[in-house]
Image (tube, rainbow, N blue to C red; front, side):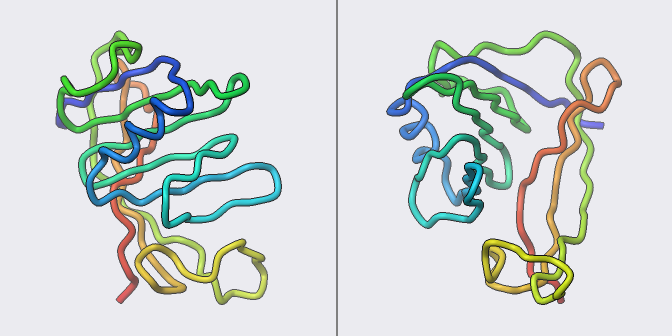
Length: 147
């Protein structure tokens, strides 16, 4: 297994938006009770995540204009706001891949028509984060079109 890094803390709406915008090549998934989708721009709702091939930023709203964050990274981060601190523990990561629900399957009622891979069927490349050998997070890294 490879070493991983996990950070956590609270940021304002503006600080979170700036952090998400600095994540290159990101896929953004944002949701609230009645809405779940992949917005084209940074749209912070009650909860969400932004990810790319090396990190994920997760958030949930804890107060008006205030969010609790977790940053799950494949490498040590020195570019994070001071409010985000490393979570203690020996963090290790392994790779995994899963198949996503076929959006054309009539048994499901997704709120979006295609995955970010621009297809109704896709696979999700992920990292499993282990804290002191205990699986703790599954973190998306890439949405791939199903061949």
